[in-house]
Image 1 (tube, rainbow, N blue to C red):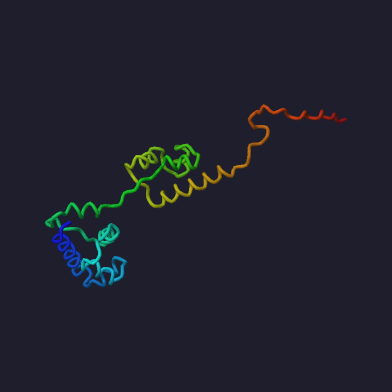
Image 2: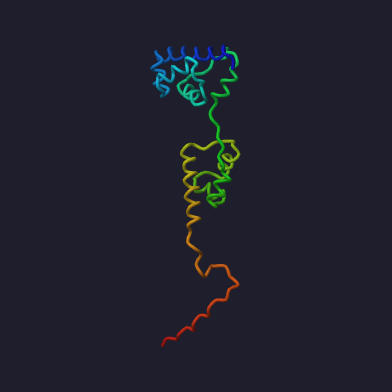
Length: 168
C-alpha cells in the first residue's frame, strides 16, 4: 500500500470517529481498545491488522469507494473464513456422519455443507460439534472390553467347562 493510501485510510478513521463518537477516546472505547493504542495506529506507528479492521467494521466503519486501492482494504475487512474439518471430527469420534448430524440436531446435508465450506455453523453448533467429537472420541478410547460371549474367536485352546450338576 502507498503512503498516500495509508494517510487517506487513517484520516477516514479519524473522521469516522469524530462524526459518530465525538472523540477518539469514545471511538477507542467503542472498539474495545485503549486510547493510547488507537492513537499509535492513527499516527501510523503501527500497522492496522485484520483484528483491528474487524473491530472497525463491527462499529460501522466502511471504506469510502473513492479511496485509491479500496480493494486492498476490502479484502482485509471481509468476514473471517475458517475451515471446519468434519472428516476429522468423524474420524476422531468414530461416528458415521449421519449419526453425528443426528446427535447435533442437524441434517446430514447441513453437516455436508459445513464440510464443503458452502455454509458455516453458528457458534453454538460449532461448540456442540467440538464437545460431541471430544466426548465420543474419549468414550471410544475408554470403552470397556467386549464381553467374553461376543469376543472374536482365537486360536488359543480354552479350558473345558465343568459338567453342569443336576438338581433334584
